[in-house]
Length: 319
Image 1 (tube, rainbow, N blue to C red):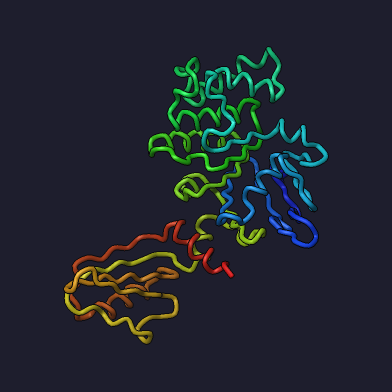
Image 2: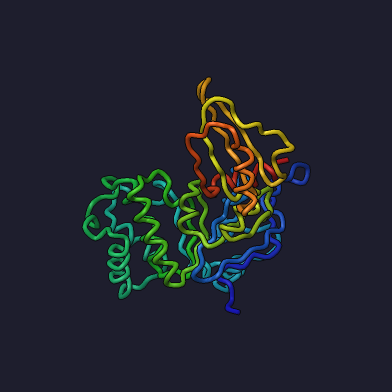
């Protein structure tokens, strides 16, 4: 088995004094493999930012260990920084009065690139992020999407083996978001390990191979996308629209694996949502029974979205 690009064991981080201590991370254990995109999900205050800061050597852990590309984040912080690209959202970390090329040169030198490698690395990063045509323009003239791509280009300057992405598509339009996602998938195909935090769960659905759910400073779930949706308790939703009398949704007509809700958008119409824990042959028999004798206009079936699964699991974990 190949070594993990990121390996975290019993990682704990506390803030404050003895009389009032806040535990941001509480014995976190996780790993990310090379060529894998793992999404770190959690509500605000769950510990995501603290974990990213520790992995990028911006914050020391209270106890436990974290290895990035085989290097300890405390004892070998310099080697960790060389192996890691960090990309934050928004305008943070960009010098807007400099050109895109000058920003890349500056951060390339900070990353330790020699003069011989610097020019070629800058050109390669610009081309990879489709910024060559704007390289000589000041960053203050860039669109939000161009600035995000410049962030990613900076993160790639030293050819990192590990990439930490914090809200990479925040504020982007759909076209720019797709461009950035395409670039991230290309990096994954080259073997780069990627840890992603995002409130845009479409990014997670499009990019991630695995989901980590952080709650109360602990990893509560470590699952594939399909497993994550299944654990939420809702595999699919059936939406039925009709007129006249609505189907009775009494407990004796619904199995434990199904929850239902009926609303009336107008006095003469009704909408029933059936949330299914799983889809099986019994589902068709259930629909036949529920809809017998009622006027149905439309039936739609869709798989549960990641956003719905995340909301369901997060609600269950909230004290």
